[in-house]
Image 1 (cartoon, rainbow, N blue to C red):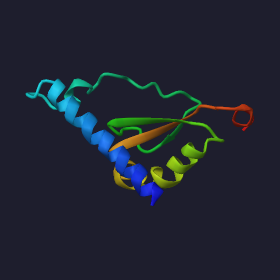
Image 2: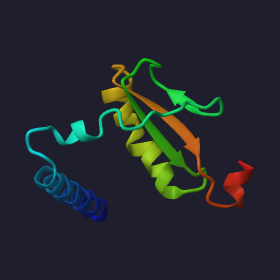
Image 3: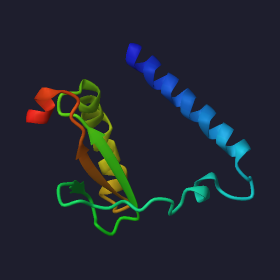
Image 4: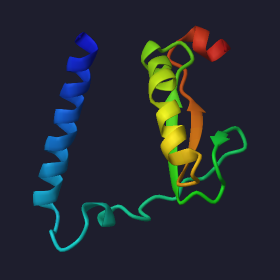
Length: 107
């Protein structure tokens, strides 16, 4: 039950942020057109990349090996992202380690 409230609150925040962006940005353009091509992601030799190298979108995930939130993201979200976006070749996921403590640095 608590998990449902968390997801509902997150969805509400995203809807409000999206609505605010719609009204702040020029309505003649898509809100995403303002950020298209804004960043070039450099794939490093140490990066773990999942998906097609030719995918038009690059999703960079920073995670710690000892973070329970990062583990939940890997368990619950990444499989859905993989099924809907990575497998069809729409997105490639780049994993970069972001150790939060000594144990994660040692891993």
